[in-house]
Image 1 (cartoon, rainbow, N blue to C red):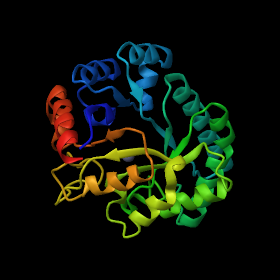
Image 2 (tube, rainbow, N blue to C red):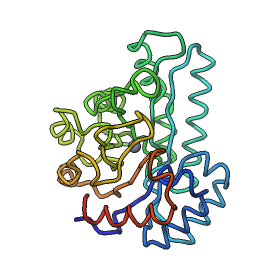
Image 3 (cartoon, rainbow, N blue to C red):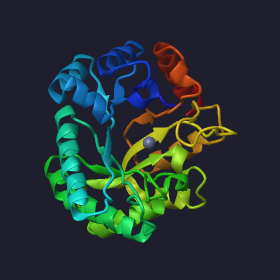
Image 4 (cartoon, rainbow, N blue to C red):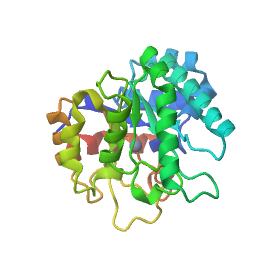
Length: 278
Ligand code: ZN
């Protein structure tokens, strides 16, 4: 079972309870020195002040959430998305994030052209890849469960994400890889061979939670590790067999349960379940 040094908490897990300074304090007080903040929290605190608070508690940033959302109905919209991703790269660099997580986006309003959206995603990532490399902020494409293919993300399997990596970075120069979130990929019959295909260099982040039966909300009813049906230790073992040295990042959107509980209790539960169920 993993030690607490491997644990990171994504601030979405305590979205209703903590702002960024409170989250940093609470996680650190529980012995958790990994964190993955969302951009709105970093912007509210300011990147420089965020860095100061993180350093003060000895925090490691497993990723900044999030860039992406590349498709748009017209060229101006696509350019605006690229510009926003450049700002996200700067913010990630300023806080020392291990990667910038990309939730890539999908169909512009009114469109039914998912292949077109996928092209826009690849073009968008390609447009910012050099800058990400220059600033030492690897881009982590996060495939999302196909239930989000219409709106949040048209990259829906690890296979698809790795194909994009192969096309944009054919010589494995780096700066581009994947975030593997058990919630999105656990069901995939190709998961294990695709993890083996990923390899250490492209394994940029590992997100954990659980899949509840039943799931009552497609977005905000993720389970705490151990409460659902995902064999998290088996997936972690495959990832670590590739040489993954990063953190295990707890990311739980839970309007029905965990967002209703006191934040410190949520953090303590993450610590306990990470030690026993991951
Ligand atoms: Zn995730």
